[in-house]
Length: 114
Image (tube, rainbow, N blue to C red):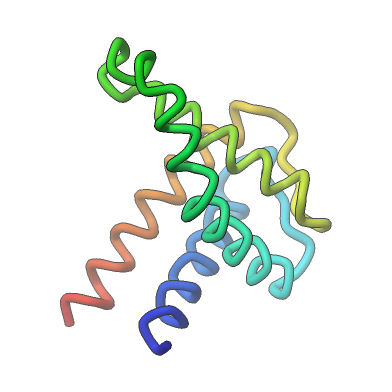
């Protein structure tokens, strides 16, 4: 349970940072950030593997680069689900998810390697 809460906190902090860095991504409150992290985690756990499986041929042809576009689209999907989370278009979602992934990875390295 503690591991889940730490991961949720890392994701929430990452989303908060991304919203302040990437133009076109806005969050209305800290509570919204917590909900975004939860919804994004659920979508990444259940929907993302199915989409990657269905798009496997194009992922193979692009050497996995198409996965970046899938991640951006799922980030945009979360903005449609969660009220108070606004992404103005696909490209802010694309760059926002890339930055979210990098920040989450670095924070996880810091937290879990200590």
